[in-house]
Amino acid sequence: QQQQQQQQQQQQQQQQQQQQQQQQQQQQQQQQQQQQQQQQQQQQQQQQQQQQQQQQQQQQIKQELMVPPMPQQQQQIKQDLMAPPTPSQQQQIKQELMVP
Image 1 (tube, rainbow, N blue to C red):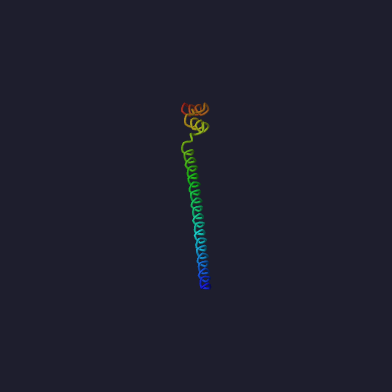
Image 2 (cartoon, rainbow, N blue to C red; image 1 turned 90 degrees about the vertical axis):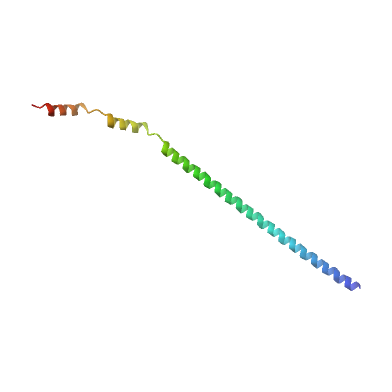
C-alpha cells in the first residue's frame, strides 16, 4: 500500500508541472498582445505626422493664393499703362503731322 501511495503522489506532481507550463504559455500570449498594442500606437503616430504635413501644404497654398503683388510690381504696371509719351515722341509726331 505504501508503494501505491507514492506512485499517486508522483502523478500529482507531474500534473502540477503541466499546469505551470500552461501558465507560461498564457504569459507569452499576453506579451504578444502588448506588442500588438505598441504597433497600433506607432500607426497612430504616423497618422499624426501625415496630418501635420497636410496642414503645412494647405498653409503654403494659402500663402501663394493670398499674397498681394509687391509694390514694385504695381509701380511697374502703372508706369507701363499710364506713362505719357515722352516730349521727344510728341515733338516727332507734331513734326510729321505739321510738316508743310
